[in-house]
Amino acid sequence: MSLFSRLFGGSGKPAKEPELYKDFRIFPDPQQGSGGYRVSARIEKDLGGETKVHQLLRADTLQTLEEAEAFSIRKAKQVIDEQGERIFG
Image (cartoon, rainbow, N blue to C red; front, side, top):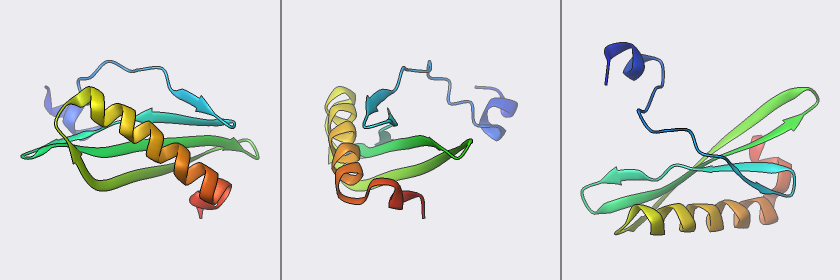
């Protein structure tokens, strides 16, 4: 990965289509660590002509990337159900 990619957010991973849920966009983005993959997702929604973003990061770890992606989506949906647009502050 080039220096510019690291500085400006290029992760080297191909962009995936988001999971759409109640007008929110969920981008699963598990973080690899020593014990597996940490649950993480970016949640977005367009409000008032602006894209609002919330980064979900949990301490939960799972062994495979696929499990972590699926769990990240489930947790993001749970947060949306519980908090709705309040997640954006």
